[in-house]
Image 1 (tube, one colour):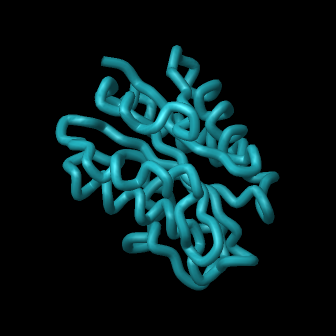
Image 2 (cartoon, rainbow, N blue to C red):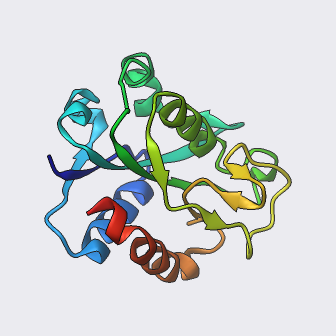
Length: 166
């Protein structure tokens, strides 16, 4: 079993972040775009990184929406999962990175061991399904308003999950 990163990207931002995460981890991690592969390959990995962006009023990114029913059938028992999400805290502050929260709930309820919670310090938003007790359920990035912080946040997060995810 190996570590793989699964993502989908509508504008290229999530794909770019996925590439940076793979590079920061410094390992031979398979990066898989679910828009072309679906989610079948998830079963073949015991350590996963899942990336999603939030669209509209807290919606899943379209490619995630397309495979969601199949994704919800996956048993995550015995799997270690790190999550990352992209959102727009200024334009959609009431549902900032809500898709990440939806993804978290699904993998948690399906038995995953989730790593990589991060502080919500430095963000300004009204509400988020991805926040639990002052922490985000994974790495949260805002490429629209705080892209200057992306690389530093990726470095800190990948350093915190390396021992668990590799």
